[in-house]
Amino acid sequence: MKQEMGEVELIVDMGDLCGECPIWEPDLSQLYWTDIAGRNFQRYSPDLNRYELLHHGLEINGFALKEGGGFVITNSHGVWRWDGVNEPTSVLTEIEGHRCRLNDCIADPVGRLLTGSWHYDPNAEYELGKLISVDVDGRSSILDEGIHGSNGLAFSSDQKTLYFADSVLRTIYAYDYDLEHGTVANRRVVVKLAPEEGVPDGLTVDSESFLWSAQWYGGCVIRYDPDGHVERRIALPAKQISSLTFGGLDLSDIYITSARSDGPTPLRPRNYDPTTGTVGGALYRVSTNIRGVHEFRCLV
Image (tube, rainbow, N blue to C red):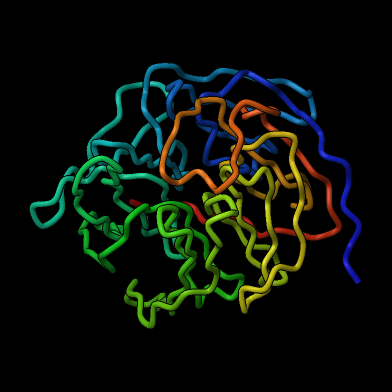
């Protein structure tokens, strides 16, 4: 039997152009997230029901909490260490001669940073993206190649499987993950969305090893079982749902980001009508009886 889900709550609507990468900070009981296009870094404190704009002007496409404080961030120019206030410090700008134009990222259980490069251009030939690892000593390596639209990353609750979304191909891949060596193997398709659906964006997992995916253009988040079958679909009052994470004291609240900026792309689903409904820009929350798992902290 499916667990009961609460109503969708609108938590704050700051009109995020591209709200992304929500991460729950358990020590402070606060949620961080970024507005990529608006270049805003934001925080929400549910105990106080308080929203704060922490920083403006820095492009943050993805980030992980850094062990000891601060963040490790990814953007169009690479990987950076950032204390949340001062100018970030560069960690990686290119790999094997390839520019690190990076999108989402995640820390693995031992503190490495995994991220994907994105060069998609619907109007021209473009370089394919790569799945990249930055080890705790700063050494970088390419784990996989041939990705059209690098996006969300997540680890299974047993830490043996890495999930990686290719938005352009409407595909979520699964890899066997070797935690000791930080390598991947056996890439396979776990989810393949039809052209009339949205595209997979941010990912997370819950403590029952089910995978959750935010669906851009689809106006929903979807829970998949480990074999990629749809277990449930939660509709949201916005079309461009970008990412999600579990938060709250027992990690049973799902925080969901969305995006207001819209433009015609070949990735729009068939019969998509951009003139009706709400595009996005708000932060939402859904209370559940399902518990998530904590995101790992980065040691890079």
